[in-house]
Length: 333
Ligand code: NAP
Ligand code: 8YV
Image (cartoon, rainbow, N blue to C red; front, side, top):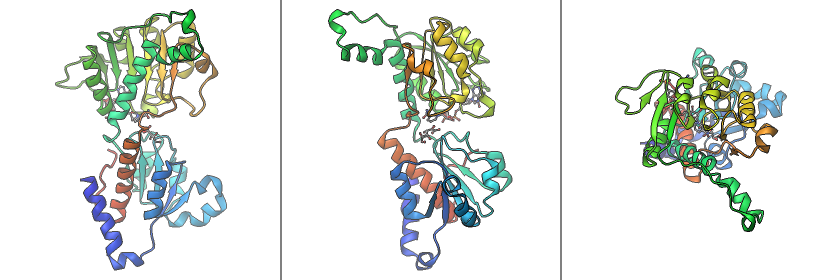
């Protein structure tokens, strides 16, 4: 469907003589984007890359002509920016999470927002499981051990078994369910919490993260970010997870109370943590970087060539659909 739209849109841009003579829509890129996606945007639009921060004087001149914003999952699009763009027609997010966009303000200004759901689900679930295995089996630590020449004076300390263990998932949406399917193959018992209990879901439901944390060995966080989930994983939840429990966060740094997490891993309140996302990216607290029972990755859960291409196609297709007068493919609810 998406590829068909892409072909039609390209055909329209290439073949229609009237459209050829029309000025290309001007869009503002608000964050450093993947270069391949930037090239795709430049082929279709007149692109102003971060001029609102790099060159405010030029931005003031161009602002009345900007009709679209290209953002990412990490980007910020506050109401103050939306208000400065009187011709703004849409915001396209290269990512499924849109917590950085003030969607209510966009809606109030009649500006739809799109994101890239589904195409990245498998990769994010894969990395969630990889992080769980990495922290439990201490894969990065074992790698360091061999590289440092410590094997001859080994053995490497024993680790924690994952197969058959208890997994709690905070947020059982597209990605949470994909993680659960993978965990089933490991013979794990699976439980979850969401605001709304899922009818027909075979897994045990708990009404909140603290109740869930009491019952599991691994707590996997995969909710959206934003104000509704800020600090959802707090000191109480970490205490409930306990000294044998591991936290894995592939959602957003804001969902976990980071100072409470630093305290929990450095004092042994929990056994360890594996984290792809942080409160103030790309800054990672020194205590986490120094601690042995922590695995850290740089917000890379969707970072494969295949998935980033699919995300770029979908984010671009949404922009092109809008400017061609066609329905948006994946508007946020
Ligand atoms: P989704 O399908 O919308 O699922 C979100 C789930 O979170 C739903 O089950 C929702 O259920 C639950 N939820 C929402 N608020 C909650 C709360 N306060 N407490 C408990 N559960 C809550 O979204 P998705 O496609 O799975 O993506 C989830 C998130 O993953 C994204 O928004 C993004 O932040 C993150 N992500 C991270 C990366 C990365 O690179 N690390 C990549 C992609 C996505 P209810 O509505 O019933 O509560
Ligand atoms: C980023 C993400 O968007 O989809 C999301 O919500 O957080 C990621 O996929 C990606 O890293 C591009 O910035």
